[in-house]
Every structure is written in C-alpha cells, then in structure tokens.
Amino acid sequence: MIPSIDEISVKVQRVMTTNSVVARASINIGNWLSLKGFRIMPSKFREERIQCLYVQPPAYMTRNRQWQDIVFIEDRELWAKIERKIIDAFNALPVSDFEERP
Figure 1: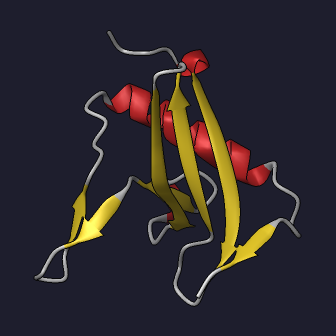
Figure 2: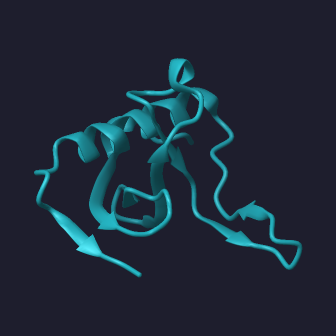
C-alpha cells in the first residue's frame, strides 16, 4: 500500500559545506520507517525544479566514482509530493539554522 503524503513527516537541517549540498533531510513514514540521507542541492535545470532546488535520495559512491541510489520511490507522483514537502520544510527554516560540515 502506498502511503499518503499526510503519513509522511519531514525533518530538514541546513548544512554549510564546501560542496553543493545546502541541507540534509530525513522522512518518516508513519511510525514504522525512517529514511535518512536525502540531500537538497541547487538545480542546474531551473525551469523543471521547485524553486531552483532538487532533492537527491540517499546514495553512495561506487568504485567507479558514480552515484548509486539507495532509495528509489517508484511512484512518480508520490516522489513529486515528497520532494515538494522536503523543499517546503527547507524553505520554512530560519536562515541562521545550519550545521557546519567539512
């Protein structure tokens, strides 16, 4: 069963890094699943993304230095709603709310 967007809660924390990540997010689905490691980054494709930002699901770098997703939301409509909810939570943060990362 696909969860409704109302069953998904989001936590976002700004980060100050030397790379393009501006924040990290986690989502909780009901009380039974927590997914951590979503990254919020500026989008190169401004016209296609929400407020010039995009959300990258948790991923790891392979030996070939390519990113491989750990989480993939199959339902595109649900993914669009999750992405919107994460970016809305990011936009609701105070500007001074950041965690410094190397």
